Image (spheres, rainbow, N blue to C red):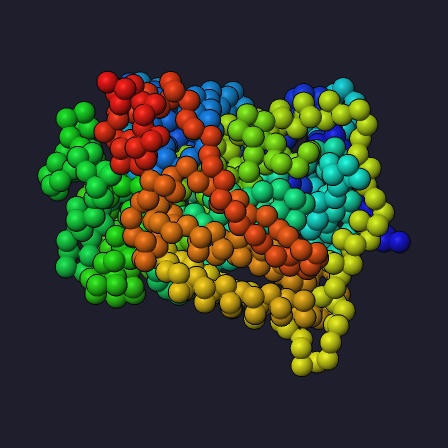
Length: 639
Ligand code: FAD
């Protein structure tokens, strides 16, 4: 029988980024005992790295803004594949969630008349991103941690124990979700990173908030934790993943020196006036405004520059087109020989505003380039290129409650799917975390309170989870078959980067899938040296299983979707196809392989948009995305 440390909570939140913390606050405020578990140190999550800001239509800088405009922008950004109910809830609730953060102690930058300041970002019609310089995520996490401490102080006063109701378990990795005999969630199994000892959380509800999958790609803005654990664990527990073919390549990552390749350069640089140029000094984005956005963006440099100070009478710069468009444009410039010396393009803020202003508005960017690349961004342009940044795909959830297709399993934040459709607008993630983190916390609390009895964890499941985690210490075959987890990770990342990256073709994806099949057959032969005490090789061996499943989901869905839309660009199918607009590709695991199960992908129709929401769009705009049959419900089509 496996030796395991046991804990018992009403709600277990896996992930301590923005989504996880907001969910935990909500569940605890409902009076439920809540655990927050995170793989790295508490406070070290992607949310803390978010720079540009949090999108919410408060209308502080331009009073024309409203939830309806934010909703429209989000649907356009996602090329109308978004779950419209999520986009609606997000646009309506984001302003309240930002205000609420200030009641927790956040302090956003101010306008001259003292309101929360908002900045421009790609795809947003009005200045909409509430920000704290270029360190917004840090303020978000700091504030929610502070809220957690204040709730713990209340618990100390009432129960004599700070952790009576809400406890954080850091440097603890969950490797398996457990279910009872009725198929409902009963627990989460994992190990302490430091000691390697096993730990079990018995619970009625798990909220998955594990963030992204970027580490499956070689060039990425994501850090080591982002191996798609939540996506893979949920899928192995029977949940659906949707939209996995849509991976966002942020247009501006650092390209030089090689050790920092992929690190993010915030879109705030362009939002505040920075422009993209090729090796000929040309502002090339004017050549890349796609038909669906024609008429909405400035056509000359003069108009684009005037827009920064007079947005009501000028159209916005195409430097701020949605990320997928800008990333593809950069890719083309480089491919056609107009790139910078290290394979990117130039991002110039130096010639656009005084040095002191740059340092004030973009302090982190100034230090990042100075310290990592020895580039002074107040005096010379940056070299930038696309980097794998965000996954639009994730666990399919009920928009209102965050519940997945598995009873007791909830999800919020980047590991959930639907909200952003085929492409996320910058700033819409931080607001997503707050809106749907809160909703998942409420959903899980309601679910737990409705249970007649707490689901029971089976000892046999604990033993199976322990065996799977320990298998890399026990080689099954001869020496020749032994595999190193780092080698396999490198091959996986290279495959995804080269063959399922920013531009894809059927031939490339098929080659990727056959390489993945080969890598998968070697994963079971991974062997690690040493002991269970802090052993990064062992941790990676466990993570590899998740990276494999998630990569197969991305590649298989990418092969099936024979069109280009948002974060999925097929060179062999370069156009949007209206027949694909309302189709989701649902990924599930199949077969009984416990190490890396097979992934199957099937299309499923989306629920049609509610009438009052469809009427927020002009018929002429919808005609670019919808089929003729779908458009018959629009009042303008009915004459
Ligand atoms: P995260 O904040 O990623 O947190 C995930 C948590 O899950 C972590 O605590 C991690 O340790 C834990 N975890 C993972 N696996 C396990 C496991 N197996 N067991 C236990 N714990 C686990 N978005 C914006 O809206 N605006 C921005 O300006 C912006 N800038 C960004 C800049 C950078 C450099 C990056 C990388 C992203 C940026 N984003 C931005 C995107 C945004 O930050 C992320 O999408 C968002 O923070 C994800 O939040 P989350 O709560 O879903 O997960």
